[in-house]
Image (cartoon, rainbow, N blue to C red; front, side):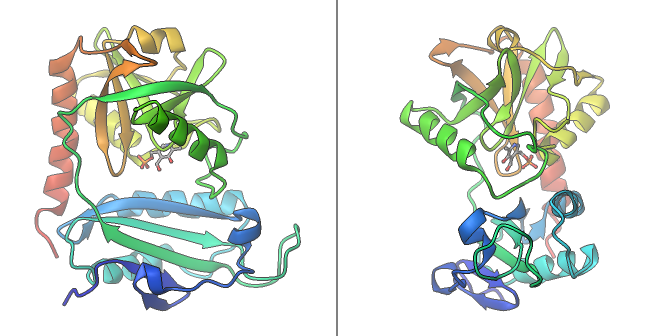
Length: 284
Ligand code: PLP
């Protein structure tokens, strides 16, 4: 029976998030040395879990954090933990950090630490359009790793908030990459355009699902880079992530954008939302 409002897990210990204490020598404290992944539940069912676990293992391998468990073990752990929360709709977050040892840059001998965090989530109303700003992408060149080193993302996100906006769109010069905690895509002349999944963006699971829905709906997909100018003159601007699915933008840097292909946008969004509702409707 569910009974918890929030849940923290640290190497097997379970408590409400506010009650869990973490050792100061966990390398996350000194270096942000770890990787994470996150998704959501509906009716206590975790959405697209296998894809998130695959990406998590890939992130850990890219930064050489050995994992002492299998994908199946992690999936079962997460599945068991989400049953403990009262809320059927949850934000599901987990991370691994590179062990606990006194501060030293080189890798420690100690085993990695596994963390899980669960909290209730309210699904967004996607008929509300969002406002965005553009920000030069000053991140390093491992953006495909879901690293805990999110300082430029945090700064850009706060900059967006102070501008009364939902998200910041990163660009490297003219080339649009992604957002501070989302991917960004455009619809132009019936084509869904999204940045290539190289080391300059996180390969979003929602991005992959949107591409699959485009193909199902007969919408052409282009994974060639697009520019800030193309973003500003797009028919629709779409921001995607696991917890907000597929939001569309009305303004960027105070200029009106998008709004020129509402039917295509709705078709794509509904297709994605239907997949989520179908995958989670049965409950457990
Ligand atoms: N890009 C960044 C930098 C992110 O942090 C996220 C989500 O956390 C995304 C993109 C979207 O990824 P996903 O759709 O897998 O949630």
